Structure formats: C-alpha cells, structure tokens
Amino acid sequence: MKTLLFSLLSFLTFAQTQLPDSVILVDGRTASCLITNIDESRVYFSYANRLTESVVLPALSKVYIESYGNVYSPTTGFNIDQEEVNIFLEKRLAKINKEQELADELKRINLTQQSIQPEQEIVKEVIEVKPFVKNKIYNKWSFGVLYVPYYSGNTYTIIENNSYPYYSSDVYSFSTNQTNLEAQLSYALEPELRITFETGYSASITDQVYENHVRYTSGSQYDSGNKIVRGLKKLDFSLGLKYYFNNFISNKVSIYTAVGFGKQLAFATYTSEPLYPPQTNPGVIDENNYEEALEDLNSPWHFNFGFGAEYFFNESLSLISNIRVLYTSSSANYESRYIDQYENRSSTEKFSTTDFVTRIGLGLNFYF
Image (cartoon, rainbow, N blue to C red; front, side, top):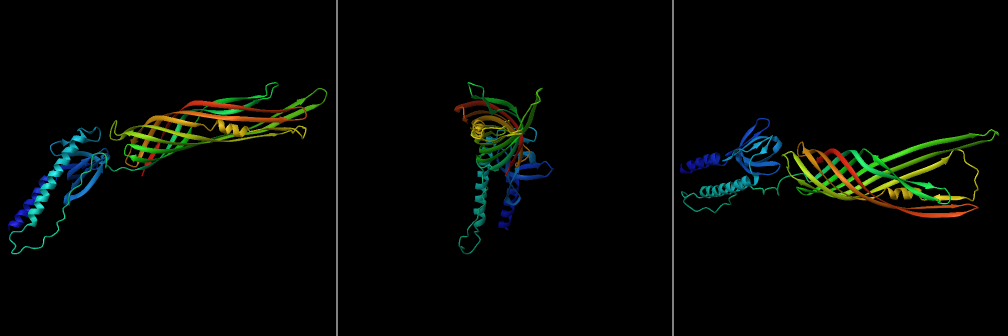
C-alpha cells in the first residue's frame, strides 16, 4: 500500500512540476511541456511520457515559461534575453534530473523484501541540454540561383590601325549593363560562417554583313563586302566566405557580409569572309592572334566584397538579395605580321586593364 501511494505521489509530482511550460502552435494546438533550450531558430522541449521534440519559431504562436509568462510573439520575436533564460532552463533541468534520480533510487529500494535481491541495473533517462547556439540544428548545404538585373562592367575589343606609318592597334572598352544568372553552392563551416562557390555565364554574338558597290562614269565598277561574325562567351568562377549576423532584424531576416576571389574565362570567335574576294598575291601573309588577345583581355582575375540580406520562408527556402563590388585586372599581348613583295612588318603590343564592377542581385536559396 505504501509503495502504491509513493508511486502515485511521484506521478502527481512529475505532472505538476516537470511540465510547467506550454507551447502553442500557429494552428491552435497546445502542449504542456518542459522547455529545455531556446536557440536562434528552434524551441526544444519534452512532454508526455518524457518524449522530446523541437519546433521551428515560425510554427509557434506563443511560448509560456515558468516564472516568465509568455516570452514569444510571431511579430516581435522573443521579449527576453535568450542567454539568461537558457541559464534558468539549464539550472531547472539539473534540479529536476537530481530529483528524478532520487525518486528512482527510493523506488528501487524495497525494505519489505525478506531477502536482498541482486541489484538491478537502473536505466535513468536524463534530458539532454543543448548548449546555446553551438548545437542548434541547421542545414549545412545550400544552393542558390541569383538573377542579376544590374551588372556594370566593360567588354574589351581590339581595333587595328593600318594607316602608315603607325600600323598600331587600339583597345576599346564598351560599358555594358547586362542581366544574367549566377549559381551559388555553399557549405556551413559554422552556423554563421559558410564557404561559397559561385559560377555565372553570359554570351554575346553579332553577325554583320555589308556591301559596297561603286560605278564609274567610264563604265568600270568596284564591288566589295564582308560577312563578319563576332562572339564572346564568358564563364565566371568565384570562391569565397559568407558571414551571417543571425537574426539581426528579426527571427526571419539575416544580414550577411561576403568576400571572395575568382577568375573569368572568355572564349572569343572572330571570322571575316569577303563577299567579293579580291585578286591578291598568293605570297601575301597577313595574320594575328586577335582571338587569343581578346580572350586574355576579357579573362580577368577579380576580388569581390559586398553584403546582403536573406528572408527565410522556412528552414529550407529563403529569398536573397545582395550588392557586390568587384576589382578586376587583366592583360594581353597582341601580335600581328604582314609580308608581301614590298614589305615585311611585324608588331607586338601589350595591354593591361583594371576595373571596378558593381553587381546587384536577387534570387532564391535552397537549404538541404
């Protein structure tokens, strides 16, 4: 009889003191529980039959903690100092675990037995306290697609000047305001620190056909024309780091800063086909490394830095926006050679460029 009363008293004590808290979900469901830890994204607790669970903050409507009352609102977030509350939760849980150990020990001892039975192994369930921040659950990988509606940068081309006596070449830059897509893969070294790998692609191809027809009064005529194809494809790679200032504004928005370095690879195409081939001396040599020099000029190394913000719809999807500034540097050697029966001419010119480029992007990030 005494054993029965003691068991009933232990049950009532556990029900009254071990579940002093409550969580209310956004769909109206309510659970009495024992909250064990709060971090930046979840609330951890145990409930009936000592089951453990955790809930993401967007799924919560209210959170009641013993001695504190309601500490959470979906619009304002937590109205308490989380570190202070976690210290309270840890001390409270340690006290409950000690009381439970004592209750289990008293329950094990039965002084009414006539003989001492072999001591049985007692399995004690101790609720784990998750350290603040360090052990929080989060997705380590993410993949993002960034739409860049604003991209300021330069595309370079080389134009030969064949007027005697200079026979030199000039580099011309065209300021471009492009839109393109970029992809980013990231891995979390720590909850707030991620290593990133980015890649982007853009291409431009132009076809030009022109004809020139001259008729003289003497009856002679002169026809000329060319079909020119120019193409430039650019593939960009970047490796960097991204640091998050968690919940800088609210529970759903994170501000971050990022740095990185990378390389752009350009692939140039240039063909010029005469529509009316002139009668030329077969011994004439006219050649250059135009495509190679164009690729080198448009394949800079770059260093970038910037900042952005992420709005989290849930743990797996976020809307991301950022602004970055890139410092780029490239160089190229342009070589040409012309040989006919009257002259033998060759030249080598070296060009180098530096730019500051701005990129503004908007996209989606998927966490897994």
